[in-house]
Amino acid sequence: MAPPKPPAVPSPSIRALDDATIAQIAAGEVIERPVSVVKELVENSLDAGATSIVVDCGDGGRTSISVTDDGDGIAPDELRLAFARHATSKLASADDLFSISSLGFRGEGLASIAAAGRVELISRRRDADFGARVEARGVTIGDPAHTAAPLGTKVVVRDLFALTPARREFLKSGRAEFARIASLLGQLALGHPRVAFALKSDGRDVWTLQAVDDPVDRLEVVFGRGARGALVAIEQDAHGIELISGHISAPGRDRSNRNGQVFFVNGRLVRSAALSSAWLAGYGSFGMTGRYPYGALGVRLPPGDVDVNVHPTKIEVRFANQSAVFDAVRRAVARTLRATETVRSFAVSSMPLDSAENENVVGRAKLGDSGESGEAQLSFAPSHSGNGIRMLGQIERTFIVAASDGEMIVIDQHAAHERIAYEAIVDAAGATDTAAPLLFPSVIELTPARAAVLHDAEGELAAAGVVVEPFGDGAYRIASLPAGYEKRRFDLDGLLDDLGADDAPREGVAHRNRVLATIACHSVVRAGEALSPQEQASLYERLVRCREPHSCPHGRPTMLRLDRLALAKAFKRV
Image (cartoon, helix red, strand yellow):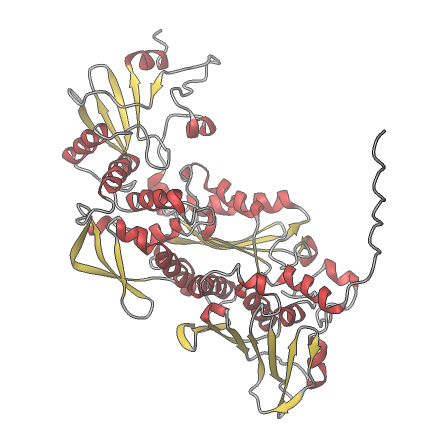
């Protein structure tokens, strides 16, 4: 006989949550880390018409965040209401949700921040002689009190996540959290050039941006040293109802990830896979597989044609006519690139390889258009011997062409040198003579985001021979490089951008290998660099002596070999 079933456990009764629990849930959706607080407060300042905004962070925002503006201010009798959930001056009815022109609109920002920490708000309107001050913590809101205050609003947040200590465990170091804040504020400043911005860390000035008419003056704050010369302006051109503007990287000035792509829609900083895809499509054949353009791209269209009520943080949008926006961005990017001198000298005829297959294929490529399979017996493996190899020259200063009695060889000079450098760095890593001190060390300024990446990876970099030391506010000195590497080839900015990618491993063997591969990538010959015949021959000879000469550390082929039979098939001789 089967045992009797245990009595069923009744389902819990449905009940309304208390206000404190509701506030914590809402805060968790809006306030993820200190940078979330800065975003909400700065957007409030911009909506208030501020012409100057100052952000000061204690320990990367972990202990305190202060945002001060000179905007319109808040009336004393509305200070408590400002902390009420879904209280806002930006919506009057549900119909307004379909035509939002302000950055904020839900009335959740201050309430969510108060649910995550202790908030002090001081504000004075233009028509008042005195300001008012109020404190809030959780769902408890104090009474306003008169106080002397300058025009505008100041919000100070302390003890972030004190009410939810488990969330504090997920925060990174103060340096890493500050890097996020610096990156966000720089991007917001890029989208609002007529507003002055200042960033401080523990009361110390980090950077100050005066109000300007042209955002080009702010490019290097966001994208680092040299960005002004690497980016080209998109001419403001209205196509239908879309207005596309911004600055995008010229061909050859790309990066290994999409982190450098900044998007604005009607002045709102957003993430958008659709805009990123359109940007990449506009680059077309001018882009390299696995590399991505960077810069800032803005789209302006009627508020009713874009839905910003998609995500709690308002970072994502949805377009009413996405295909039209996609096409407008793609055309604007392509038109801009075609107009640059860089592209006019870059464009050359090339073999019509299928781009999708060319990225991963091993051993074949499509040639011709006869309808046949067209297998050309291309080999990605190097010859077993360098004897009898003749260097014929370079194509676009990127590909080395060589020949022997039985084959033609095309070498990707950057991928080849990357493989050579990687194996040398791996072999030398950890040795006492890995680093070669520079007789004349280089001094470079780093953005806070790049400095945070450097700090997190400095141990692995030093083990590989890259020693970078602090050298004053925002400046660093490259003191040593791996033995045998020329200082002129080393690209610290690019290395830190690659290591800071969202998908980069942060620990373990994968992290170490990525660091070593990235050092190799940014210490060697680049595409577009002229090499003498002797340098070309040396590169090939060193490559064939590598343990794994067929690919670079990132998996791209280093060379292609086209034998006599493949050439005969290409010209329909067999």
